[in-house]
Figure 1 (cartoon, rainbow, N blue to C red):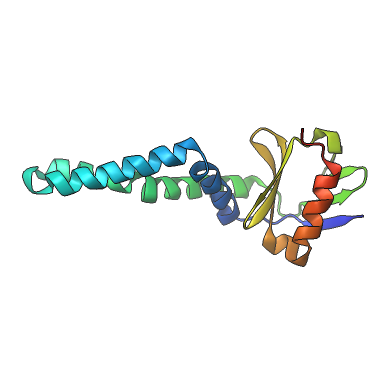
Figure 2 (tube, rainbow, N blue to C red; figure 1 turned 180 degrees about the horizontal axis):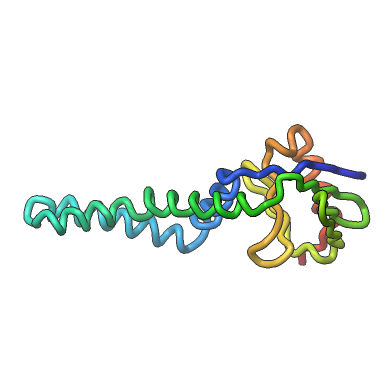
Length: 157
């Protein structure tokens, strides 16, 4: 079997992956607890504090649900800008071929550490936090077949 895709990810794709990672971990639980605690503190003390403390309370409420996602999106935009626009990624029985007009690289299946299936994407990890994101818009109608193909090629013990 052979799959071939033009690798065109967006900052939104990277942002979604980061947010999945954060909110499916203990960090996300801490973020939620902190935000709820800040909401409760703000409700309790709002009338009794000065303007500076009110600003700090508002900042604390917005830190994880507003400021953190904006910062992650800005970082994702920088990463996407560094990815070549002519990148092509091919999968066949011998491995994964990553090509641009200037260079190419081959990954053998034993170099793949993990496959992750998220609601909007499939992520192929080559090391702990690095890999290739294949959003549903790239995969089109091949998502399930492609995922089964990847799982059949990668030993994820």
